[in-house]
Image 1 (cartoon, one colour):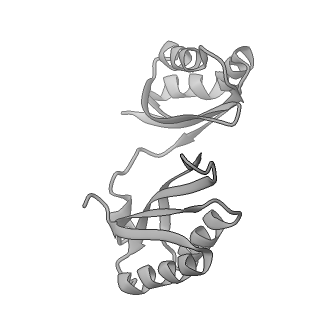
Image 2: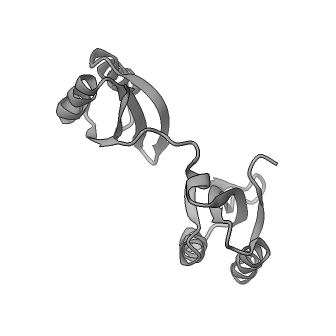
Length: 180
C-alpha cells in the first residue's frame, strides 16, 4: 500500500537543486509523483508529492531538513493523504477555470480569493504572472485558477460577482467549466 508525503523546498536558485531533491527521494525508495517548481524572484521553489511504502516515506520525512541543508534549501516534509482526483465530487462541486488579465496593481489576487472564499469555493490551483507589455513596458498581470464551485451555488451569480469586482478593478475576467 502506498503512503504519501508532501515536500516543500525553497532556496536561492542555482543549477542542481532538482537533481539533489529528486536523488534524495529516489534514495529513500520513493517516487516523485506530482510537482510544481518555479523560479520566483531569485528563489527556486518546489512543491512535491512523494509516494512509497510506509518505511520509505518515513525516511523522506526524517531526512528532509538535512538534505535541504546540504543543498542550500529550506525543506519541509509532512505526511499526507493519497491524491483523490475526485475532490470536487467529494465536496459536491464542479470544477471551473478562471482567467483574469489587467494592468498590475496591488490587491487583485486578494479581491478574487476573498470573494471565492466567502462563497465556499475551493481554489484547487492558482498561477499568477507579471510580464511587461511589448511596446510600453507596463506591467501586465495574468491569473489562471482552477476552482471547485459547490453544486449548491448559482454559477451565474458567482460569475456576475466576479465580473463586478473586475469592473471596479479594471480587470478582464472569464469563468468557464474546466476542460472546455
